[in-house]
Image (cartoon, rainbow, N blue to C red; front, side, top):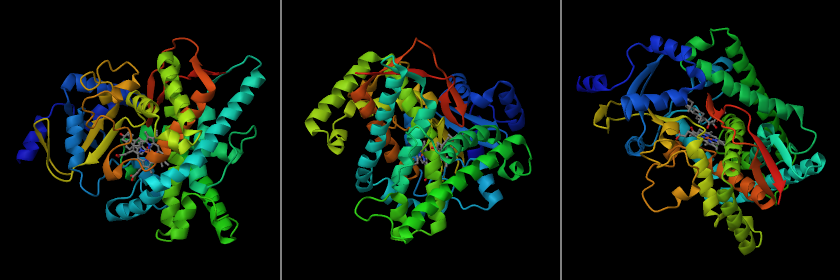
Length: 471
Ligand code: HEM
Ligand code: 2DC
């Protein structure tokens, strides 16, 4: 009774879910989820209730409320399960990986994966693998500079970075190179990249519909979505089969690190189907996320030459001191790490973080009942002047200054359900930027304003042109 009453008091548009969805659609909400949320926080204050289609949520923006939410999440946290992703797996009878699993089944898989993917020991082994891909990018960029005949390389780097990101994640997953930073690009790999982009793109129009309805709809969006996941699963399966075969035929050298998949197979603790499901998710999750973040990072550094110089000085000093030892270098590049955090503050991949409450929580004096879907407006929080003074300023230094940073850096989520690929992503981005800063000046043409578009993940709303100029 009292729960209901308190929920009823929450501000927001939550009475007419379908009408709200219709309005949302009309307003062009599909690609503007982040702007609409920011506006609702302005209109309703730091907590509001909403209903879109079948989805009811309570939305919060302050780090304090986020802390309350996450501290009450328990040992089996659950986030919003993206309906079309669930619907695809049920339709094709594919197993869920950690991304979509729930309860104890999620937890046991996740604990085994954490050891191979997230633990400090495992992660140190990724350094040479990811650094090598960064070096290849530099080599390719130098070749492009040479070909241009103009002492620089100017381009929209989207596709180059997609290939860099897929090459990186596959190197750590499979211990093998795909060769995507060469002139000839394997068409199957390119198809995988296109499929991941299409998969994200076709997810957003179906986000607010129930999974049961989705596969009975024979719309183009659903068919494209199925095509995209099919392409993702079949390409990942090929990579997995290759490794499996090499392992059986003892073609893998046992002296060097052989990759996450090999370790998981040899440990023999997780059934092969579950390994495959989660490795497929990691391969797909490793493309658009890091590449878009790197693109934003280079854009911000191009627009703030002063910050760029500071970072370069830090990286070059670290290199001298560590005599080129990348593991050592990574321990001293504080400002570069802060620059990545700062990039993700302004340009988060995930518009929100979400959790289903398992017990009553009190957020801003409202009692929220169990089983409520609560969303932390990550994009809105990153641009809230109450949380980040002068939010429009790109200032990595703000992360190093004194003062509380409690629940402010949430770009990879929080707790046991946080991003599984976090350490891979961070290392990959740190090493990439280290190599770039050691070799090139990053410039951008004019003061072109680039906005943000929601395409399930947040991406630039227009192409970004960048110039790399050898130092
Ligand atoms: C989950 C962000 C890169 C794989 C998540 C979540 C966020 C996130 C916010 C939800 C966390 C939560 O609910 O608390 C990012 C960002 C990335 C990135 C900002 C890069 C800039 C990657 C990469 C991989 C990956 C490279 C694969 C290697 C996953 C998986 C999950 C996840 C599998 C689901 C984990 C689970 O439910 O147990 N990511 N991600 N992500 N991410 Fe990432
Ligand atoms: C999208 O309202 C908007 O890391 C929804 O690497 C709420 C929501 C739920 C889950 C989020 C999703 C949003 C954005 C993309 C995320 C996803 C969880 C994991 C996924 C943040 C905010 C991502 C990109 C993974 C994707 C792995 C996949 C390709 C197998």
